[in-house]
Length: 502
Image 1 (cartoon, rainbow, N blue to C red):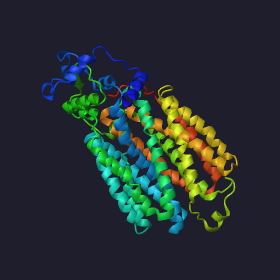
Image 2 (spheres, rainbow, N blue to C red):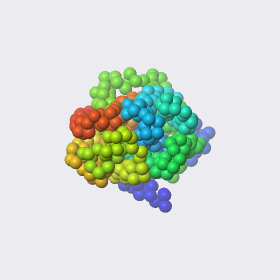
Image 3 (cartoon, one colour):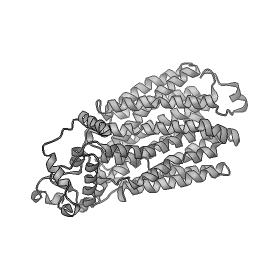
Image 4 (tube, rainbow, N blue to C red):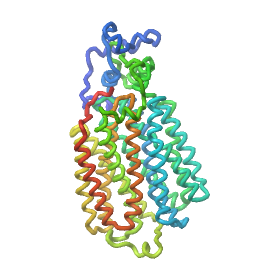
């Protein structure tokens, strides 16, 4: 059954079997001893080496298959972890405000410090992944996350909780490297769909955490919830025995023999083969630096990098602001979003009930159509056009919040807005790794993620501080930000759809 699905997917991507496939099959069936470096050559020896193929030629020839499906499922656990962490930040702070007597500004410290941890660590993880490998970077960050996430369940007071959740954020800062690995392993024709689809695991993680809270937070408290949310991270660690290193990292780091072996492994897993000839890799001497931030902002990439940083900032800020505003609306308004509940004015504290959690789950479920819509559009309209179309539609929907809607209407509209914003932000995760070469791809993702985390840092101020001053001002700010995001997407220098990764 699975093989039929994969074959159908490959047929839609336009990959047809070539008569030379049998030659490739004979080539890949050779024992390791006979291949060694005979199947490998450098760019300096192209004239005398006969037929050659690049890593991109190889992965295109192999096609999409079982290997890629397994990779998406394993790496999807990392996206689940961030989705769960964002949910924790959005509901744990209001919960502790009631139980520990926090002020509004103390409440904002939890999401701010967690986001700060992500922001500080992201370029560091990018450097680690560019220099030492994608797999090592993800493994170290996962161990770090699980250790401090579990420790935070024993926090004796709010200060300790803030410190430990900051360290949890440091571990989650490696999330962009999931897109780096997927971009490097997926054929160009499937890359947009795969990199967009994996963002659905973020929504799954958010809904999973909300569903657990419906049971654990209400009946057992936040400590049991935090412990239970460590499980997906443990599953990801358990999957590391299968987790592969990027063959493109092997190629640029001078480990061409390992790159060749990894490509053979992918071909075997997919029931396919390598193209005939020798694998061509860039000599080590040609790779002066890997993971250099200077190369990310040098003249050839400067305009694109600055524009991408702005889009990262706007897309992530708007998305997380919508998440936080959802919980704030449910916290402060019972019937109409133009009239606060009396309880808010009197005690400034409202504990979430089961209806609140169910509404949060429904608004989060609205993200699934957004992901599906983006998967369908991204290889039809292209990355750039999909981005600015999403931003334009979001502007219109966000403007409807100026109406005095009842709680049900506000819930539906927030669901639609998050549906669109998740598509807008998902395209950024596709465009960025495709835009940079392998030697600085992880750093490019990491640096963009920093600006995304800066946007995330501002989200609590908007959703909780500015929101408490004026809901109208908050809505004006949202519309203005989306207009900037729309113009930034329009100004990107090129589209990366179908781009060959180098």
